[in-house]
Amino acid sequence: MAREDDLDVADQDLEDIALGEDYALNPEFVPMVADALERGDAERLRELLGALHPADIADLMGFLSPDDREELLPHLDQEVLAEVLSELDTEIREDILEHVPSAMLAKALGEMDSDDAADVVDDLEEDKKAQVLAAMPEMERAAIETSLAYEDETAGRLMQREVVAAPQFWTVGQAIDHFRKEADELPELFFDVYIVDPSYKPVGAAPVSLLLRSSRNTPLAQIMEPVTEIPVDMDQEEVAYIFDKYHLISAPVVEPGGRLVGQITVDDIVGVIQEEGEEDILALAGVSDAGRDASVLEIVRSRIPWLLINTVTAAVAANVIGFFQGEIEKLVILAVLFPIVASLGGNAGTQTLAVAVRALASRELSAVNAMRTVTREMTVGLVNGALLALVTGLLLYALGQGLGLALVFGAAMIINVCVASLAGALIPILLERMGRDPAVSSSIFVTFVTDFTGFFAFLGLSALILL
Image 1 (cartoon, one colour):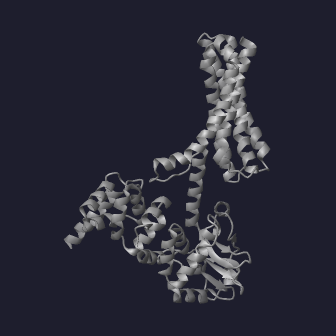
Image 2 (cartoon, rainbow, N blue to C red):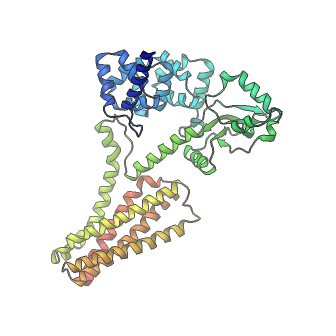
Image 3 (spheres, helix red, strand yellow):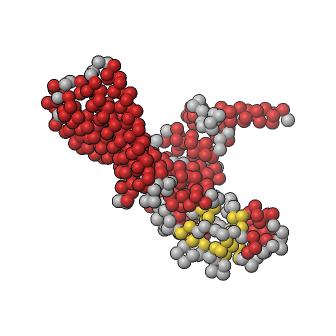
């Protein structure tokens, strides 16, 4: 008995070492795993991995070298491997899949929901994909092949084909008895029982909680609630919006004829929301997620196009400076001040741009309120520009630069911040109207507008008033 207590304490201590209070892997835990791999200590590896949830093991994989990942795979049993594969980043998963035997992978896929299994199979090379599918039972293979037939990032690829359905003439008791009898065929996790008509079209849904509270003789048609159907070809971002707007836990997916073909659950949507949010954040900076194991060349290729475009726009803006070169030579202080006007305008534009892109993504900004939003942002820019002009103008005057220069600097500040706010709101709206992703290219154009306006406004006003 004392031995079992000691083991429980040891396991608890190991869990405390593995994860911090924020549920992230502690830095000292990863070298412990790497050391056990290097020594080939299988017993120690089982102890270390046993302290982790499969999602934490997937996180651990990202911190290990490719060689260590390959050595770790044989120490994962079939069920754990299945959960780990469904949690891994795509780039790391592609690397790991090369080293998993086809037969072992086929068994692991059988432990997954059909949507997760399809994602994994989609990452395989064609020859290995054929081997793995051939090693799977016919029904599981057919489910995966059907999922892969749908376009990427659509409801068809996102859904799991396992659903719980019942005819509308059944009672609660009949449904529960049937589900218990066919327990092995039910999805691992489900929230609703979809009520279908004879053509297998959903006519409603009975939440499991409501099903359990109802008497056995109650007809399902009496307790069913309306459902929000998801077309199989709907974009996953649109699906996430519907889930968020209507606070859905799950929703049936239907093919063009209205027949039920699968379901999407909220755990799938959480991943979509995170993925789409990360894409937008990276796009605002003009970069893409190259992955933890990306090479320098891959990262350069993903970032250089937008830097080259930015170089062109910066060169155009810089021509304004050349146009006023004579004025700058006469009053050297202008060379010190015009970058400040452009920089503050750029910051103001970035603030407005971030708000506008988020509003577009969440459908809070549309044609209905676009003009009101643009007008509001222009007003905010005008007020912020006036406040900045007052502060910076007084500072210049206090430093002995003269009232004229202080007024010119303040006026240029008001103009640029106001134009920056207008550009930050208007450019993403126009890009979306043109069918472009406003998160990808808006920042380049906003930066160009603020630089060009800042240089031209300050240097132009200086040439007219001071010289």
